[in-house]
Image 1 (cartoon, rainbow, N blue to C red):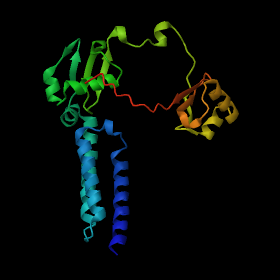
Image 2 (spheres, helix red, strand yellow):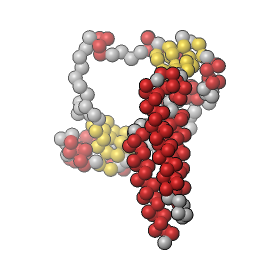
Image 3 (cartoon, rainbow, N blue to C red):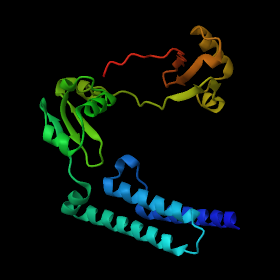
Image 4 (cartoon, one colour):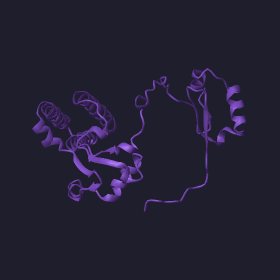
Length: 235
C-alpha cells in the first residue's frame, strides 16, 4: 500500500510542478536570476518531500508549492512593470573590465576571482583580454564581452557583400553510427558516403567520432583520437 501511495503522490507532485512551470513560464537556467533559481529549488524540494510522504498531508505541500509559484509569478509581473523593483530583485550589471582597466571592487562584489573571469573570456573566444573593450557581469550571472573595434569580426555588410543563406549542417555519422535519415535528407546514400570516406583514407566507421555534411556538399570527418591531451596552458 505504501508503494502505491508513493506512486500516486509522485504523479500528483509532477502534475502540480507541470502546472506551476506553465504559469511561471519556461525559461533557461541561464535566464533565471538568483531569486527565481532559489524559488525553483524550493518548489522542487517540496515536491520531492511530498512524493515520499506517507502521512495524510497531501494538500499542505501542494498549497506551499502554489504559494511559492504565485509569489514568484507576481514578482516577475511587477519586475516587468517597475524598473526600480526589477533592479531590487534582479540586481544590476557590473562592469568588470573597461578600456583596459579591471575593476577589483566589482570583482569582489560579484564574488568572482580573476581566474574564473579569464576562463569565461576563453570560453567566449578571448584568449587575450587586451582584445576586450568591455566586460559586464549580467544580473543572471553570465558575462557579456564587447571586443575592441580592431578585433571585432568583419560582417558581410562591412564589405558590402550579400552572401547566400546558410543551411544547417547535418550530422551524418555520430560515434561510428551512420544516421540514415539524416543522410537521406542530404540526398546522398550509403555508397556515396563510403566513397567519400575512402577518399579521406577512412575504412572503419568505428574510427569516426563525428561526420557532418554542409550546404556546399562538403563532408567533414572527425576521427577519434585515443590519446589524452595533458597540456594545460592556463594554470
